[in-house]
Length: 170
Image (cartoon, rainbow, N blue to C red; front, side, top):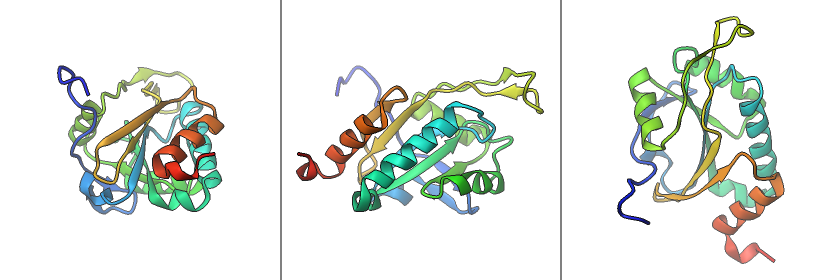
């Protein structure tokens, strides 16, 4: 890694969608697949979570090595209860939320852009445009790879499979 650039990732203290306090260390021992978004997102998040869920299903037993995490960028609306209800459609994912300060810290650690913007079509009057990158952390919590939203599901599956178990690739 280029030493002149700060690393991506780091420690965090958040609350999962069951109301339990968690840190990055809570997920050590497994790969973690992180996606940042918000439950009121109408296009990007549902599309990304559907694609990621399909990829994990296609990985079969290899997916058991991965803990998918959905970290909100809108903690004012995304309480643990709201996250739990929303993620009922994406049962592989654990939702993470926290205070504004906690969310801002994890966004900064992963270099995630997210900012409120006026949205007259939203009943609360705002949306939160955000970075649409999926991060893969190794069992030690260090960044292994990142995947852009533009990757096809098949390309993402092959890349994930290569990180989870390179011996399974043709």
